[in-house]
Amino acid sequence: MSTYTFAYLDEQTKRMIRRAILKGLAIPGYQVPFASREMPMPYGWGTGGVQVTAAVLTPDDCLKVIDQGADDTTNAVSIRAFFARTAGIATTTRTAQASVIQTRHRIPETALGEDQILVYQVPIPEPLRFLEPRETETRRMHSLEDYGLMHVKLYEDIARHGHIATAYAYPVLVEGRYVMDPSPIPKFDNPKLSGNPAIQLFGAGREQRIYALPPWCEVVSLDFEDHPFDPSKPDQNCGLCGAGDSYLDEVIVDDAGGRIFVCSDTDYCEGRQAQGHRGKDAA
Amino acid sequence: MTPLLSVDGLTKTYGAHVGCRDVALDLFAGEVLGIVGESGSGKTTVLNCMAGHLLPDRGRVVFDTRADGPRDVLRMSEPERRMLGRTDWAFVHQNARDGLRLGVSAGGNVGERLMAVGARNYGRIRATAEDWLTRVEIDAARIDDRPTTFSGGMQQRLQIARNLVTGPRLVFMDEPTGGLDVSVQARLLDLLRGLVRDMGLSAIIVTHDLAVVRLLADRLLVMKSGEVVEHGLTDQVLDDPQHGYTQLLVSSVLQV
Image 1 (cartoon, helix red, strand yellow):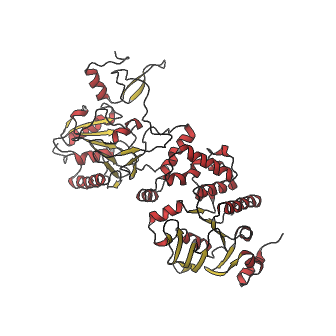
Image 2 (cartoon, rainbow over the protein chains, first blue to last red):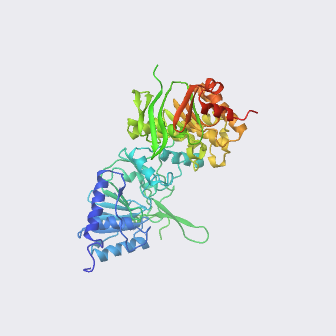
Image 3 (cartoon, each protein chain N blue to C red):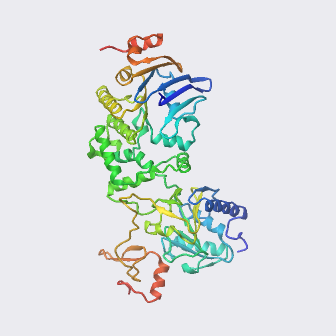
């Protein structure tokens, strides 16, 4: 423990990242450039999220890390272990107990509170990237609120598939100003972005951007009048806990095409099972 | 009568090289103005300066806006200029690929300007796009095809549809028929002439092709070495050229 600075990063770096976070909170949805550091993990494994988490952690914090909703996958386990070793902080898998939650591609089902911080790992922060490859041009488009192109993408979806087929990283408009990529969370989670009492921070390590949603911030998913936003989910209940309101993963269970739907949020599912809820596939 | 566009003392230099010098012109509503000249005479520079793609060193470009009357475009803020660029103005590039989004379907290309000014009803956007594809003689059944699958002439027509969909009042065209074979050129010119007359458009057409201006332009500006050497009614300039360079230009055209 004594061989590391608290939470791995040196104090000047954390200071620099905190300044970027504060700026991001002051301008909701705006991508703040920051001097991303090399982290002891490959790009794409959450280097941005880890740096943001390192900058906001205090010794009293309790950290939860999820990857696609699960607490027990490689990415989640290794990042949790990383901070347990370099910051000596408490860790948990319980959403309600955590003060800082780092997440990859999900928002926990359990409602968050004002004393919590949600840190997202972001691969590509620029919502316009695949429509306009030039960074100079996308920046200008953001500064001039020139967002017609974003709807062109949704138009193309409807023209090709008959409905808006974007199912994750669904673009949102923050406080009526900036169009933002909510990181690759399923669009099912989009409504939870808006009016959330927790602080939501987004870190993109390779792309060197931080952006943020302050508590109770208004976030609207983009859509058309005659094709409104639909946070879809499978027409099923969780096979283990019977929950009908959570985001479900489809799991293949044998070679004969058997499948079950289970909550992607493992903590939520386990919590419900502990309360005695049972789904149709529960052993 | 207030001119729709009034340009005065427009000067642009590239270091020691002169792009254009002291260009002045007035364009009235419903009028088509041709700018001709050889390669490097500065006609595209003038067009780009007027359209806000290039910042001139000196001069004024006054546009008669719908809301506030005549305003100097060069002194407008960037958002205002962009708004103008996707509502009242249109720019048709020489190469359709510069003016189109090749990764987006024909319908999306036509709809982009509508969505940029706030259209949020898919059904209406699509209906408008279909209507415009028909108007530029593209089969409406190809609305979901990408422009990469279109021929050169179709791409150019698609670019025109994409630009005219918001009902602009002023269209800048940079060699609209360049790179097309003659029969396709003829159809495109026919189409353009029809659209310009029907919609009462004003247009500035830069070209080195005298046949294009003969067909489309009411008035003509002849440029050489960055300066306007002659201007007047199209037929007058072409049939009775006064300046030596214009005489050379007119006599250089092969008569078949």
